[in-house]
Length: 148
Image 1 (cartoon, rainbow, N blue to C red):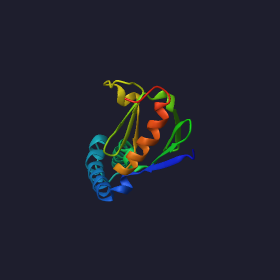
Image 2: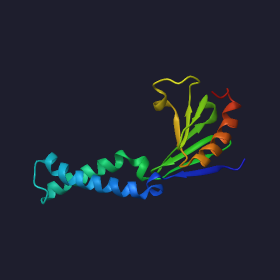
Image 3: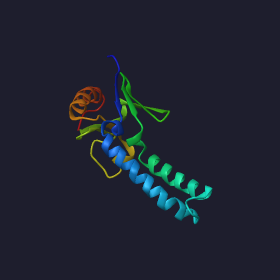
Image 4: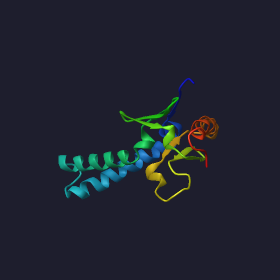
């Protein structure tokens, strides 16, 4: 099988929401940064506080603002995000669930409240890509232990 690569970048897919988020973060940073530092905004320390608040907001929504690359290979899924790379073998997953914008792969057959910390959510972007990826992944994990 030739590897299939999917790039998920929600900010690029919905630029209006992204602009609104950045505007909100700028306003929040201009208000909260100097207040946290207990100095006026027009001082170097106040500007630094505003910059720190803005950075914290953007990094908190990093999956929205920065692209994630999913590469579906023969042995598993390789995920690259912000310079880091992680490999998930198909044998790790026991079930999958297709959502509106992607796939959720779980290491357990029955869902638990801790699944979101243990599984992998693949952001597909649209329903057609999610459906294509579901067929691809389902054939891979059904060969290991079965699909939920």
